[in-house]
Length: 345
Image 1 (spheres, rainbow, N blue to C red):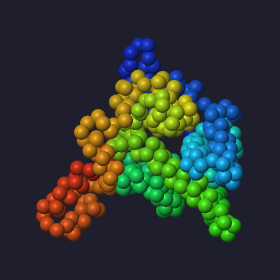
Image 2: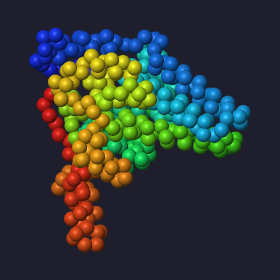
Image 3: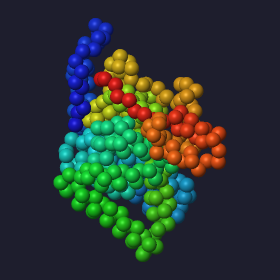
Image 4: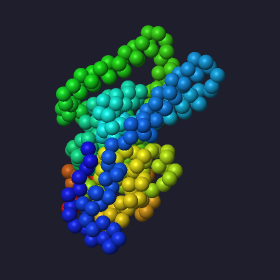
């Protein structure tokens, strides 16, 4: 699933590749399928092992609840990277093992692997498109701290766009049936406390984490559709470990088949090319006063219009008590509007 680069000429220093095609050849070593035993396989196994230990210790009653919740969060956090790489066929070189890892991670997360895969690939095809990028809606339709519940929109989008292929609708039914069966069993046999404390609660925390570091931060300010600028990089060794490479998100968008543990070296190799293309390589929150104010707005409100003049939220001005507040509301819509722009590659 290597993302191809079609541009032909880029003027670079003599000691660097002379065309984007040359860069593609240079980065090829990161595009090949990972080894059968790779860090993503380790994350998959560790996630299930940690989840099992968490449940075991719950029944042993020797470890405090905050420790168990932290362990459950970590197990789900690791599986979040597994399902992401599996949907790009970058988790394992064997197609069947890759699929098994994707479905296994989805079950632990309470997701559906076909939904995650098809919706995420749709995001890659339409980055920052208000109508066709489902993650754009997740990031721009409410405050950041409520980003996790908005992931349910993915399932709605999956059926609205009829994205499934072959047996994927059946797979969705099996995974959703399993999820419902676990909850029913929890009610019937009295282990809903485990589900609430060690599954739903940590899953909500992971949803916020994934929403912020996979969707929100990488694509701010949500206006660029150019493939060199529609996501960003903010280099950091610490963040690279904590969020498993997602601070190099632009690398993932440019070359989706690169596994998460090779984002950092791939970025360091291609940095001169990204510099040439003007790719954003900072967090983009504190660079200007506007960045900071927009971030604060997103934390507390975050609902953004996608048109300056015909915003769907403009009619709300009619319920405000006087013209002063109506003008304030319309001015706020104008200042916070997200109107994506396309640029030539």
